Amino acid sequence: MLKNWISRDVPSQCGRTAIVTGTDGLGFESALAFARAGGDVIVAGRNPARGAEAVARIRKSIPSATVAFELLDLGDLASIAACGDRLNAKRESIDVLINNAGVNDAAAP
Image (cartoon, rainbow, N blue to C red; front, side, top):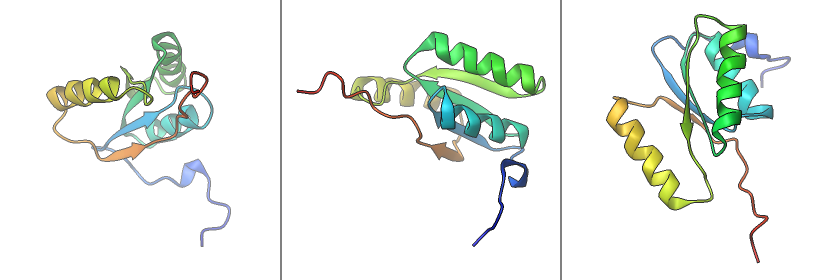
């Protein structure tokens, strides 16, 4: 078991692409840590304004970061399929997937 492990302990992620769901909280912090480690980061979420804000915050902290936003609503299968299609058209591979975002169940019966 690792003791006192922190984000600075993340090994180099150069040459690797990560999708991190969620634009705030743990999702944002995970994306930031991956970007600090040199990875190519895709922040995925359902709110484009919050996604743009997360991307801007990462770029402000790490000007050399390769980071982008992708629209993705994990509560909508059509949105998941569309995001997958877009990424498949743009990317050769995805190396890391961090499913962090919660699903809004406010509309649930």
